[in-house]
Amino acid sequence: MNRQQLLDLYYLEARSKLIDVAAFLDRLDRADGPADFRLTAFQEALRELQSNAPSRAERVLTALSDPTSEPIPAATTKAACGAWPGKAG
Amino acid sequence: MRYIEPHAHMVSRVTDDYQAMVVAGCAAVCEPAFWAGFDRSSPAGFYDYFCQLTEHEPRRAAKFGLPHYCWLCINPKESEDVSLASEVIAMIPKFLDRKNVLGIGEIGLNKNSRNELKVLEMHVDLAARHNQLILVHTPHLEDKLKGTRLILDVLKADSRIKPERCLIDHVEEHTVKLVLDGGFWGGMTLYPETKCTAARAVDMIEQYGGERLWMNSACDWGVSVPLAIPHAALELRKRGHSATAIDRLIYQNPKRFLSQCPNFKVLEAD
Image (cartoon, rainbow over all chains, first blue to last red; front, side, top):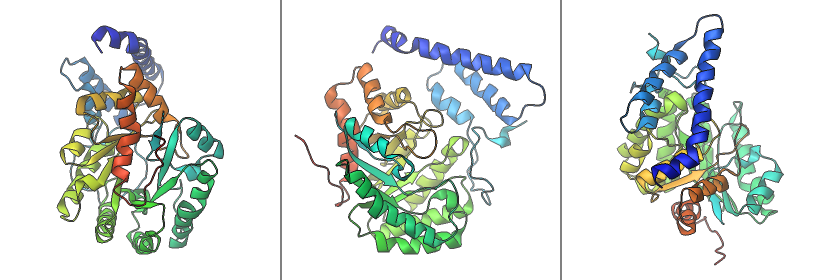
């Protein structure tokens, strides 16, 4: 498919998701209390979107991933939260 | 249209889902052993579950003329208790000669812990000793990239394991290349939020080719869509893929991988 066809197929859906992200960040701004490492990771991932380099999806996923390589000593939870706490700075 | 659902947790689904899948063209469904949403308290709980997967669930599917297959293991979410896992793994060979068993799965990692890794190695050894296919679950979200690397290291370190007999499931854009470059098959799971959308799955097919990729719904007791594959077929069609190419992706590919197990048979309509 060419760019025009892809825009015809996906533009409105992507626009809608973009506005959802903007509204999510506005909602966080309006709320009280501290945020946590997930917002930090989210903002870092957003920076990957602004780059013109290819493989944005891969880079966003990598930005939200645990970058370490050693197994952890023990699993204390079963759940994943979508961002790596170790990146909190 | 015909398709194979290579990963669905049908014990968690209502009978209406079977009916809808068959109406949509499902020719076979494959059910990996997984976590029930709570930890089972003893090996006996797994014994009952394996009986459910090999006896009861095939009967439920057969009411709709749908062949049902399964994979056996203790899921990575219950692998922190190595002692329990050892007892469950010791029980699995008793079930391997049942006619709907495809192999060992879905094994893998969840939080990438040392015990999970130990239990993964035990499962890989079991599969190698019994010449079984392997279906691998890769971890969720932030744990996926690291977990996929650890899993591939385990599989590559065992000389008895042939990559073409292993499917690494739940790949996304940051793991698909690792999997395919290693000679393994990759599975893309079509989930509304946490894994992969149909559009992204089609992106990966277009970027990496569809030679060793399949798509699945992995529908279970959580938010998931049993008809995700037919919806992905529609996405492929919108993107200009031919009916032949779509058939190759959603029917021929899973059939090609799964047919490495002699138990797997689907009736060809043509």
